Structures are given as structure tokens and as C-alpha cells.
Amino acid sequence: MSLPHAILTALLEKPSSGLELTRRFDRSIGYFWSSTHQQIYRELGKLEQAGYIRALPAAVPARGQRKEYEVLPAGREELAGWVDTPEDPKPLRAALLLRMRAAAVVGGTGLREELERHLGLHRAQLEEYLAIETRDFPAERRRTEPDRLRHLVLRGGIDLERFWVEWLTHALAELAAAAREDER
Image (tube, rainbow, N blue to C red; front, side):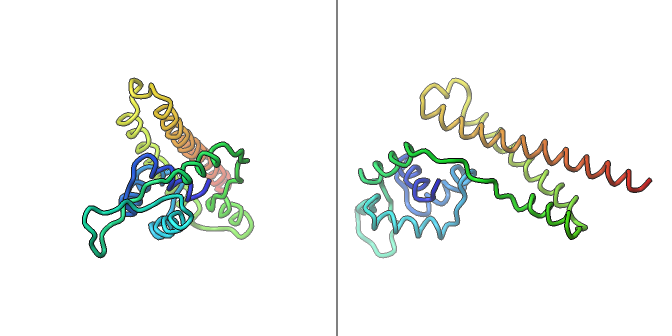
């Protein structure tokens, strides 16, 4: 997945200014494809140069006015081609897991606290996703293919957060049991 495709998707859903787009990323696409605001603005320029998007003409030209972008036919074709291109899963890159491997080699004093912090973060994210599901995807609003697909993306996030909550809970319990054994 790439940022240009995420931006094209968002703009096809609703033409937006760069600012509106960054806010929408913060509330939706950013949950599974994060990006800084600078990256989004830089990519908008590249997409415009490539002929995939254009800034909509302003009713009254003014200096410093926000540009609102829409996707051009070439951008839609690019996105459709990308959707139809097979892609293998990418290896997981999780700094927490790497820290745990490093702690196995050099030790560490704050690992349990970091695991507990991550557990709290994943629990909070899970609650946020569940609230979004309740608010935006009641069963009667999942009748169309686009709504079902959006809901499935959210369910993927819910399931990933449940995995992390379960795994972190297990890891903390195992570390606590090991600490009790060491004390004996």
C-alpha cells in the first residue's frame, strides 16, 4: 500500500483541501496507513504533477486560498490498477518486539512498564474502534458493497487490537510468573 493510493482513495470518496484531507486521515485512513501532514501535502503536489489530481478552480481567485483537489480519470485508472495488482503480505515491523529481543540479550529494567503502557494503548484503541463500529456501522447500514468493505477494514483493526490486548496480557502474566519463580 502506498500513500498516493491512500490519498487517491480519500479524494475519490470526497474532494478535499489538503487540510481537510489531513484531518480525514487523522480520523479514518490514518488508523491503518499513517502519514504526517507534510507527507500528505508533498504527495498532493506529486499527484497533481503526474496528472492524477487537480485543484478545483476557485470561485474567486485569492492569494493563499485553500486548494480543493479532485481525482482525474488518470488517477482513477491508477488506483483501479493498483487495487487489481496482487501484493504479498509485508513482514511485521514492531519496535516493541525488537525491544523484547534486545532485552533478552542486554537486559532491561522498564520492559514490564512498557508492555503495560502498550496494553493500555491497545485497549484504548480497541474501545475507539468499537465505538466507531457502533456509531458508523450498525447492521442496517452495511447493505452496500462499499459499506461492507469499509466495515471489514474496521473489523480488521478491531481484530488486530484484540490480538495485541490478548498477547500483551499473556506476556505480562508470563513475565509475572517468571518473576515469582525467581523470588523463590
